[in-house]
Length: 291
Ligand code: HEM
Image (tube, rainbow, N blue to C red; front, side, top):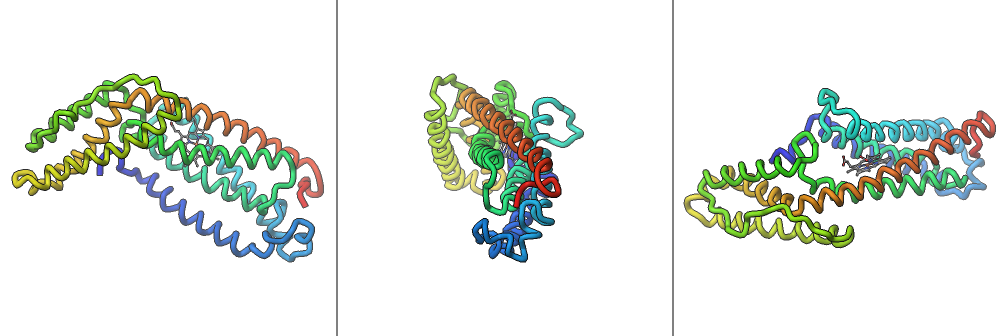
């Protein structure tokens, strides 16, 4: 496992907690299915109405918990752009928290809504939330392709070149002769976002092909095959980091453009969500307007 793939303890906790929480919420949705499948007009007649309506005992809990997780989710922005203190945990751990809260929070909000959109503001908040989560999931694909330190910080070009050189020397010291066409330089490309995304998918395939080529070379060599277990992880990292280097500027630019949209959609979503909370707590019985 290479440094990029090593998971911190916090990441492991979130990766375990995520599926557990998702399963628990899916179970709650399934238990409430008789209520959630009723048309709006018939819901007040259900015995589950008092608990599962948005302002009910459980419905309100879902809403508050979901909103809290989304606010926590946004602390990633503060940690990544404002606070550089490493004692607060690595960016990689914060990213795991971000993904956890970014999926479980909206899940809770769906349960809070009881699978219905009643007011225009709530509908706008929900739609922008779907866009933010959708963009987050797709952005994660780009995120994992941008060269980073084990802590999750984006690598500078010089650092990447140095790491690649070290890998090259380590492989050569183990007797691996790297094919000539495997030297790489960062190239500046002027592709638009769509072709840059397509190039990223194509580069993934090329990376896989090159690794298989190196692997075959190692396994078919009587001198190298016995140490394959030590060589192959280095070879994989070498191929990956080489591919990063070749597309360094393009990947950083792609990430920058994507981050801009993800950030501003989340700000819009938050504004609608806050409006929704303010309206819900100021109108109607108990301060909550939803039936
Ligand atoms: C409630 C839902 C979410 C909100 C409000 C949200 C909001 C944000 C914000 C404000 C940032 C910082 C952008 C910046 O640095 O300018 C961010 C970054 C990011 N988010 Fe989300 N996000 C959500 C869900 C998700 C999900 C579900 C994923 C992935 C599965 C995700 C993946 C990412 C990634 C990869 C970054 C970029 C990290 C970086 O470059 O440092 N987000 N998000």
